[in-house]
Image (cartoon, rainbow, N blue to C red; front, side, top):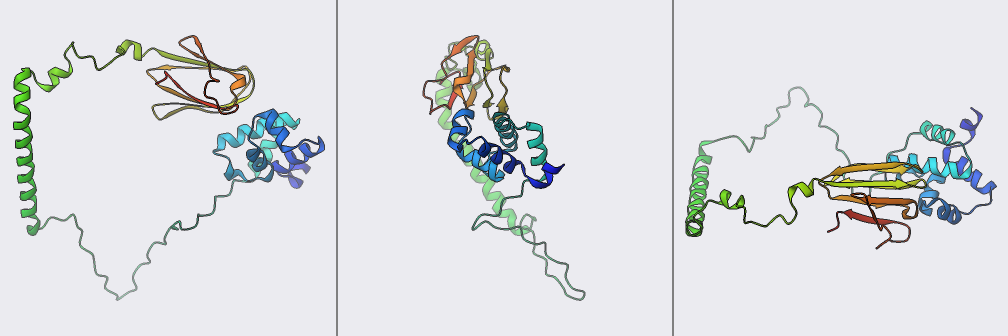
Length: 252
């Protein structure tokens, strides 16, 4: 294609913006994409964007805003792979594997530190004695307390009068969250360090998750997002930073 030989994805977007006499600040305000990300899209500085899903989602959203066919922009983007970032100053480079010794040269082998030898037996015996003494001291310190309570530790943990869990287990497993997008918005959802969703949520989309939680949300456009917790609406504007916010469901 002629477009492919003359333009990159970033150049195509930049020329379309300039033809419409739009500034980067105005585009950022209307698309809710940070100005530095728009500059990175136009200049082809892909390493500035957090991840591949951000690159694809922002390219599609920015192209649609400028009136450029998103598939054409994505096709140009895929023609040139993203270069690997240069190593930072002070970062150790991967060392080359040592070459094989020349014929006739004897290589001295370094003994493994994990090999057993007769000299290490006294050390092992001494360590075992110290562990036995420590266990004996701990047992005699805890025995009077166990005798007073007349129950073992595992029985105490399962006693019905314990109130460590404020919320019953049945209630913990019943968390349900639902999110709806009125316009294209960036969204990231995690639970217990597990990534559930990250990327652009198209307009009209509805996502729902359920489980014990907690769920962490990072929303890039709170004006176009509706969040429900157990079918009850949540105010996502509280504590917002501009048009972005981070929430935890259930709250702490």
